[in-house]
Length: 264
Image (cartoon, rainbow, N blue to C red; front, side):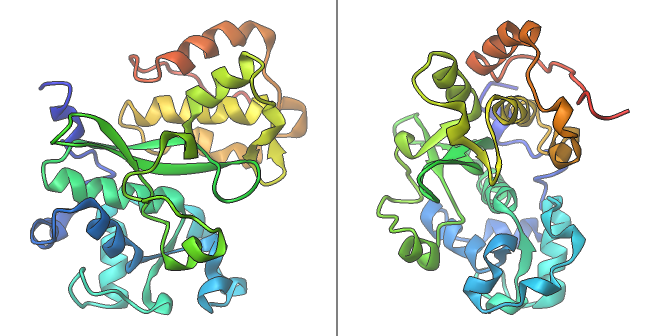
């Protein structure tokens, strides 16, 4: 398997299962595929903006599902062809990682090298917000490009997003390792990076590890349970800094097994 072949091979999380044939019949263009994803999913944090009742959100809404399970849930809600956008109340509820994973699955199914990436977006607020996007290989130029399938007309209007969401500028999204190294060089404040009220070097570490894991075919991990970590453990030990610097610089290195220290 070549270095690019590994990014067209499905993982258990990206394998579309029974919907593989239906996906093969979809258009090839990345922006079109992202639009199809938007007609199948709705983000758990934006339900009210789509006229949905966020108070009825179940505890599993933040759980990233394997694409085969996600598509089965979508078809159970509305069994029309995938290319037909569902009303918001018939879409499956997920998070940014589900949008990224589904676009990644669609592209891989069409032989396009693609992978999910973890990092920070600049376009949701004045700070850098924890986010997941899809990175895909442009067959014409041979370059890796960024796509955010979550950016639909509503988000584009609310957040005044003007760039092409199927070919995002690198300045709009920092991979976790880039963000970590930017802070370590003193070029940005760690407090500018995080998720809601959880910011700083510790959260940067969480995303450095999650981006490393996803580049080793682990789209989910125990590090996703970071909300369970007690405040006392939310710090980066000094003896981990050099190791994290190396992991941030080379996130696609062979898998480093590192267990969250707050889990027994």
